Amino acid sequence: MRVVAATPRPRRAGTWTARAIVTGADIVALTVITALVAPTPAGGAFAIAYLAILGIMGTHQARLSLAALDEAPRLGLAAAVATLLSAPFADDGARIAQLALAALGAIVVGRAVSYAAVRRRRHNGRREPTIIAGSGHVAIELAHIIRQHPEYGLDVVGFVGAPFPDLPAPILGEVAHLDELVTELDVRRVIVAFGPTREVEMVGVLRTAVLRSVQVYVVPRLFEIGVAPRSNDVDDLWGVPLVRVRQSAFTSWSWRVKRAIDITAAASLLLVTAPVMGLAALCVRLSSPGPVLFRQPRVGQGGHEFEVLKFRTLPADHVDQTWNAETEAYTNFVGRWLRRLSVDELPQLWNVLRGDRSLVGPRPERGYLVEGFNTTVHGYRDRHRLPMGLTGWAQVHGLRGETSLRERVRFDNQYIEHWSLWRDLAIMARTIGAVFRLPHRASVSDGVTGSRFGIAATAVDPDEADTDPAEEASA
Image (cartoon, rainbow, N blue to C red; front, side, top):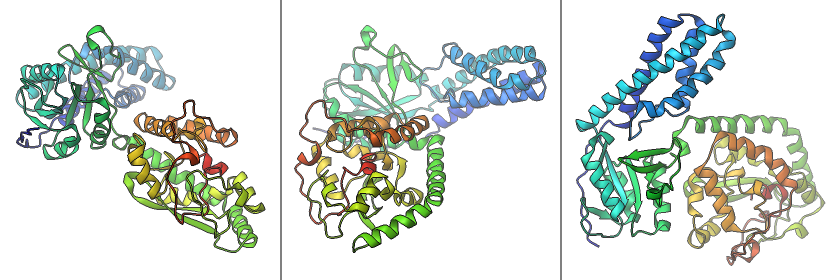
């Protein structure tokens, strides 16, 4: 395939400048209307709450299609929530209600003005380099729309995908080259228009693009007959709906909160369970010769290895020869009880405290297994986008032990795509029940379950076994 080189664009202020304009207009509108209607502490509290809620709801994000009236329902919902939060602290509830109505009108007017300013900047050349993934008729139509309507703020630098006649911009390479092109051309947005390119070829590279803080849009199939979602994540390009793919969790403030929760919880649990761990260490030492802890390299986020720590529950000379091996017969009385009570897992809190892994996330595996699974299980490599965890979305659904690896991977990637703090809290709560629940049997045998997976181990960790109750909760 002939690949045409594109000229790198200079880095341009786009998204952040537009967001600053919109946010600034909201601040001015709220300041003026509060001073006129309710210049009181309660009025100030309402204004601050309203602005914060607008930010949390994502209304300050720069959309492609800017229309203040279309956003009025969301702006009104934010005003209602701010009213409920500030009304209990107001001496005059009616005044706060009047302020809410006036603030809503001021915000809508302010948005109309700020959106006009953003569109003017886009007309004047403040547009963002964009690649269209796909090269069919829809892709061509999108490219023509973008060129005819600079108010959307996009600048098509080319296509990736299979050759197609009459393309209005160059083919930059195959879909597999998207990651390199995003970096080389400083691409800010990618629009997926499918075409001759198979969907399975796009999933991995698009996930990588999202990790690079590139905004990805997908044209829904059969959108011509109304098969398109109606939500705040849908943008519009001159009548063509574009579904925004969620940005990487790393780009959100809530990810930093997740890490803070990990540190706080791990440190607290280490302190609280210190006497228990001391007793467990003594029991392991007296029960059989060998080290108290076993250490094993596992593959974590981005393919980087870290060392897992657990209390040893098997003989020091035991060798596990398969994935998901049954090792209960090899444990002694102390080892069985440590596993049954999940005490053998407590040293892994140190891994969480160090940042090797998280409390919640996909389960880590050994390096040689990861190499095999990366080439035989679709999507397995993508589950390493986030830190590995002690428990996860797959495990609380019973996918542990002798269960389908493909189903685990599906759940792991779904967790990553839809990650939220609330889901993490729900998983931690459900993990308690998952420890005592029987594993879920695969509904359809996929040949990649339990010890049936044909990868042999050599001289691996004696303590590795997914039949460990607590490891099952993180398996």
